[in-house]
Length: 196
Image 1 (cartoon, rainbow, N blue to C red):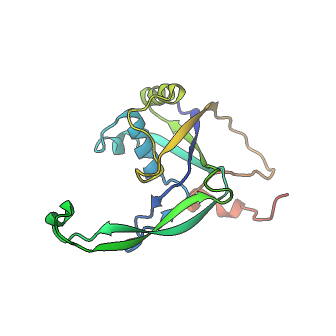
Image 2 (cartoon, helix red, strand yellow):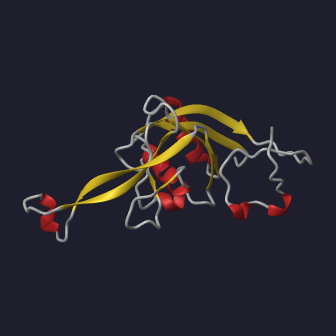
Image 3 (tube, rainbow, N blue to C red):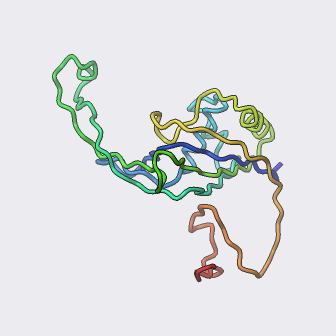
C-alpha cells in the first residue's frame, strides 16, 4: 500500500493559511501546511475534528505539496468586533470595531481571472482511507467543501490520478519540485547552481 500515491490539484482564487506564531496580524504561509491539508481531507471524508489528528498523522499519511502557480501576497485590513465579553457579540452594544491586517495569497498575474494551484501528493499507509479518498476525489463527492485555509476562500479539487513510486538511485542532477523541510534533506548533497 505504501507504494501508491493519490494526486490532485487544489485550486482557488484567494488563500489565507494563517501562521500560528502571528498574533497581532494574520500573516499567511504561501502554501497549505500539512495541518491544513489534513483538515481538508478530514472535511472531504467527514472525519470529526477530534479524530482526524490520529487517523491522518505523520505515521499514517505523508503529504507532498507543489506550488503550481506564481503567487504573491498582499495585506488587506478587515473589521472585527472588539468584544471583551460575550454580550458584545450580539451587536446590541455599541462596541467599536478593530481593524486587523489580513495577509492574502493570490495569483501573481491577472488576478482574479487566474487561479492559485497547488498539486497535492498523498501517500497513505491505511488502505481503507486511501480507498475512501480515492472514491471521493474521483466522483467529486465531499462531506464538506474544501477551502483555502479560511471559510470565505472556497476552493475546488481536480483529480489527477494515482502514481506508483519508482525508486531510482542516480548520480545525475535531480530537480525536486515540492516543498521539503530542511531536516529531510542531506545538505551535503545539494548543488545550488542555477539550472537551465
